Image 1: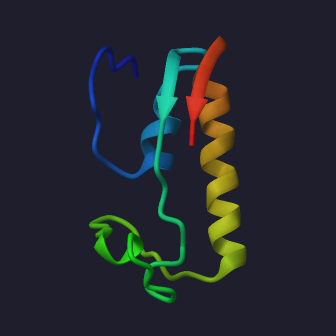
Image 2 (image 1 turned 60 degrees about the vertical axis):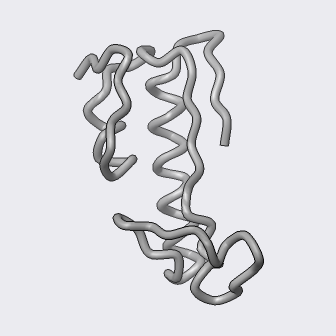
Length: 84
């Protein structure tokens, strides 16, 4: 998949798996931080997710984040940038 100059809404891992290697110049993401439903802070209480849970076992959360980061690394061009 070669989405050019588009914003894509969906499950990050599933979308990333469809993108070609070395395709992205810049990646920006703000994943769920897995704290909102357990530790409501002044900022987190205002964050609402429609496609994700912010309350999953920590081991599963970390595994999911590693999978997403690996895909982001794969699709980012050499010399590209990524912001988490």
